[in-house]
Each structure stands twice: as structure tokens, then as C-alpha cells.
Image (cartoon, rainbow, N blue to C red):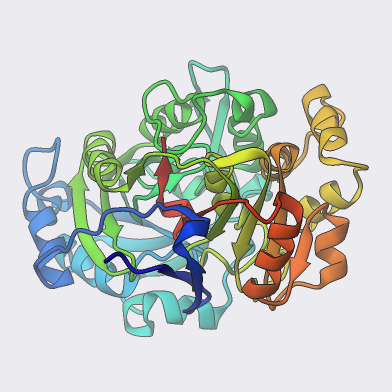
Length: 425
């Protein structure tokens, strides 16, 4: 006999929030299919490095004879297991002659503190680099003009990429991305180490509104296509990208030429992450826990996934710790300074608002056009959330009570436990 209760665990910070509902109230539970690597993480990575995709020979061969090597790595907001990946990459390069630098790809994010860097990369690993550079996209004198793209973008990237004869490699991870299709690969360059003007160009309002700028779409996605071209123009020659399971442990890896390896990794992620929508009046989701739920800005990712399976006029409940609060002042100001989500969208689409973080505000406003949002977070003040046109709850139980009030007592619930990691089709 089928159990009459559905139990779901939602990632929250470094822990989880558990929920139980009568089965009659649940439309579905949409989760990525878990695939175990079957090997220790180091062996998974070593296997990928032994068989690079799209390149004849291993990374060590590419590095041979190079005097300069630049390694780009994601910042503290991304769960790349750099403590494991960095030493393997450095051992693979194994050059005593080369100057090896680490460039931390912050995009438009705040720079990491020294303690955050040591926690993410490992103090011993950091000491193996001749220099550590934190990318600062708004500092014009730290960028150089890499050329004009076919889209019309004047590509500006960190000047560390301009060294003649340098081998530039990147590490990262691949998961669905709410408007770029997938993370990883070319995103290490754009937006990772690009100048602010280039990021703004790539994240423009019309591109955010494009129907192909969505999770799980690689081909035809205007944002992803431009990222791919930018990575080639900037000279990104090799990537190591990991695929993580629900516990944020390494479940797979790809390495090799940037675009070929990335495509192979995206195919793997798509196969295990794609689910069929289960439209319902209430959707309960998360931002997949730490570090992605460290601020409200990042939680737009989970909300955008939930919007693909909520009925118009319904309610989305999202849980997220938000230890850093809202996270982005401009994003907060845009929401608070608009009379309604519709008013904000009008300002963005007309060009009245065209500044850093407008894309995040635009996507959140599009979500709020179709559904009410209740945020469950211990790191956010109720007044702040409400000024941003959302509701706040101190517990999931409180949020669900309010959701049923808004959607009606007969409303059904769809759970999307790992929002950003799920492709809703």
C-alpha cells in the first residue's frame, strides 16, 4: 500500500529543511536523477585528464615549454571542489620553469576574503602559485580589449589573459543555468573574468527576454553563444569541469578543449537533470543550499526554475539561509524602488534602468508577474523581503500555511528540492 505521506528534504545552508505533506496534496516531486561515479573523486578527475576531449595529448603536453600559465578558478559563490581539482591540475602541468598564476573569476561578485580563499582552495594549494589575482570587473585599467565579437561586443577581459605565449586553463563545474543554459566552460571567461561593460552587453534586457535564454538550452541561446565566442577570442585553451551530485560530491568530470569538453559535460548534466513539469498551484523549492543560497540575489536561480512548473496566479515557496542577506545593493534598490514587478519590467525594457544586476531584477520581476513568492530565511528581515514585493516566513510550516491561504485549501503542491540543479521541461 502506498504511503499516505510524502517526505521531502530541501537543502538549506549546509543542512536541510524537511517537509511532510499528505500525498493527496502533492502533485509531484521533481528531482535530478542521481548517478554515482563509482570511483573516488580523485580517480574520476584523473580519468578525465587522461582522456581530454577535442585535444590530441594531455594537459602536460600543452604546458610543455610554456613560460607562463594562467589558471582561472571560480570564486567563493560556486561549489567547485578546488581543494581536489587544483593539485591535480598543478601536478599535471608539472612545470618547474613556468610562472603559474591563479586568477579568481569573480564576474560582478564581491571579492573573496583571505579566509574564504583558504577555505575554498586550501592554503597549501594557494602557496603553489607565483601570484594570486582577484578579478575586478569594474576596474578599467585591469582589463584589455581582446577584440570585437560577431555580435558587436567589444570584448574586454582581465589583462592577465593578454600575455604572449601563455597557456590559459580554467576549472569549474557544470549545472543548469537559469539564463545561460549551463554553467562551466566558457563562463569562466564571460562573465568570470570579463570587464563590466562586456558583462552588461551579454546580459542585456532583450537577451534575458529571449525564449531560448533559459535553463538547459545550449544551442541557439544568445547568451551562451556569445560566451562561447568570447572564450575562444580570449584564448581559453583547456578546461576541467566537474559534475556534482546532490551532496555536492564529484559524480563526473570532463576535460579538454573548452567547447568540446563543455558540450560533452552539458550532455551528461542534461540527461540526468531534465524533468517533466508538474504544474500546480504551489511550488516548494530551494536554491540547492550553500554556497548558492548565501544571498537572496543568487536565489533567483531557484525561483526561475520553480516558475516553470507553477500555475499562473500560484505561489512559490523558496527556502534559503541567506547568511549574506540580499547580497547585491543595486538589485535590492531596483526592486524596492519600483511600485510593482510590472513597473520594474517596464523600466528595464524601456532602457530607463540599464545597470549592473538589472538582469537578476528582470528575471525576478518576471517570476513575480505569474506567482506570489514566499521566502523562508533566517538571514533576511521581513521588512526587506516585503519591500522587494515578496512575502517572508520564519519557517516552512508558516510559509505553507500562507501558501494554502493564497492558493486555496485544495491547491496541489509540486516539490522542486534542488531548484537550480533541475531542468524543468
